[in-house]
Image 1 (cartoon, rainbow, N blue to C red):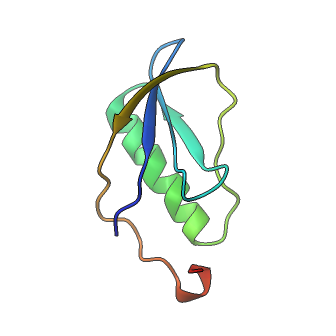
Image 2: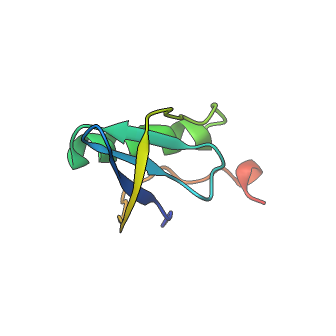
Length: 80
């Protein structure tokens, strides 16, 4: 399963990312590795019916495309 993620550089350092397909789903990390781990957790939580993860940090619009792998399958009752 591929999910589009938009990654931004945070003004205070590190990164934050949002998942356009999951409204309100965003997370942050000091490093790209930490961000990827946090993204997997946020997406998995949303797929299991949890509240989306969000971050209220100040943001700068530097975008990168990131490919995620080994995400949990989407439950059939979550598909639209």
